[in-house]
Image 1 (cartoon, rainbow, N blue to C red):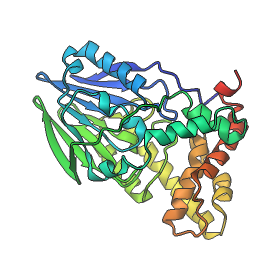
Image 2 (spheres, rainbow, N blue to C red):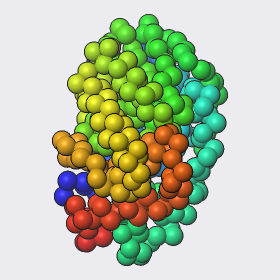
Image 3 (cartoon, one colour):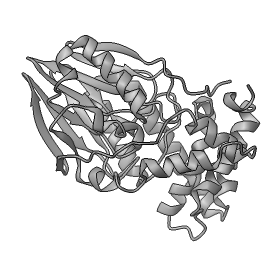
Image 4 (cartoon, rainbow, N blue to C red):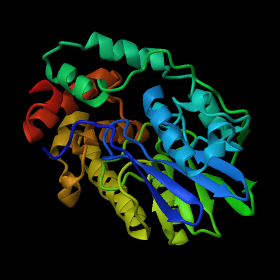
Length: 328
């Protein structure tokens, strides 16, 4: 199968002096990347994981590199509010958690308890929706997670220091979410993009507008840096430009179908993704077309996200067969 069941075989890679990436084995639902930055006995973590077990594994791997991080981390950055980038905040031993103002607000909107209830609701459900929900989210434990909110927030830009490294925090949202932030380390030529970049994985536009996302990709490409996406393998300028071009193609093709009067689902089925159809999670086109229809002012936007997930599940099964954890 092209889209593999989530697993927990993360790896740690050093991408520049003192800059490490906790790299997910694939970029599927909830399988996100994170980072560790070390300089002159100071440390910074970029994002945490979707559940506490995954976060503990990440912190153990980081402590193997720098034991002091087990006791104290100087700064934790959350690139945005999605749970696969902040659900593990409570386990990080730090007094400083930094995010954009919008991210701090958005963290309240989909509590872990709601995800736990969703997974429980669809256990044993043999519908396309039930199978898809279990495949995408059933391997994560959303119970007993307490959301730890940022202690510091900012808008637009903020600069912090870790040892002798300057870290530029740049708010590029709303795009994927309302408060997306990228973290750029000029002296190491590394940028952590959060979910502005999904490398070889289909992105999800929860917020938009799409032109903000396109502009953010252009900005990342200008760094010409080692680029750590929120999901998928480490990339560079090429990955940023591919993400930009996905959104240009989808925006333009969706606009044509919107103006022709097609429904959201008919438009999503009709769009020719070309090579992007080979990216993981290509069924997310239904979510993205719906977001674009909302942006275009459509009166026929699908408001029930479960209805969209049902369509994605049916498309996934037609394309890939039964999800791995449903056909064992």
